[in-house]
Amino acid sequence: MSLEPFSDSLVPRDGRQSPTALTVARGTQRLLLSLGYSCIAELPLASGRRADLVALGDGGEIWIVEIKSSIEDFRVDQKWPDYRLHCDRLFFATAQHVPREIFPEDAGLIVADGYGAAIIREAPEHRIHGSTRRSMMLSFARTAAARLQALADPSGPYEREF
Image (tube, rainbow, N blue to C red; front, side, top):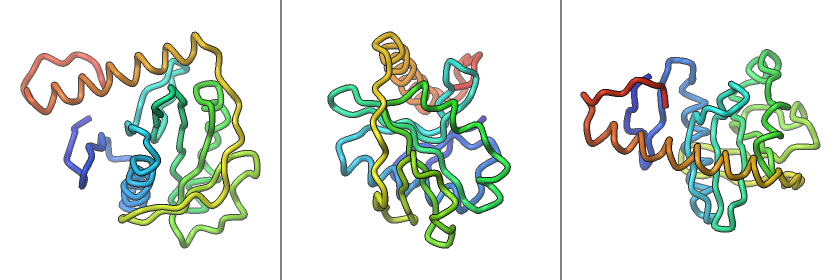
C-alpha cells in the first residue's frame, strides 16, 4: 500500500478505490473536519475488517463512514454491519447520482462531492464499550503516527500495513 497526497489529506491507495469513492472520501473528510472530527482513511479494525473512514471527535466519539460509489458497490459489499461494533455512529457516504433509498434507515447518510458533503440523515447513536473505545483510539493514534512517519521517511523499515 502506498500513501499518496489526495488534496488536504492522505488516503492510502491499494487499488480498490474508484475515482468516485476517492472523491466522496475527500468531500466527506472535509465535512467531518468542519464538524470538529479528525479523520483517518482505511483504518484496520480489530475484527480484521478495514473501515473506509474513521472519525474521532473532541469528546472521544467515534464515527465510521462506509463509502459506496454505486448501487453495485453497495450490493456486493455486505460487511458493513460489523462496523457497528467499532463505533458510536455508523454512516454511509455516497455520490449524488447514487439513489439514497438503497441505504438502510438505521445508519446515517452523507452525500458528498470532491469539495464537501452534507449529512442527509443522522446516524443513531449506539455507544461502544469503554475498552473498545480505548482500543479504537489507540489504533487511530498509532496509525496516524505511522503514516506521518512514512511521509517523513519513505524508505524507512516499515513491516506492517497501516
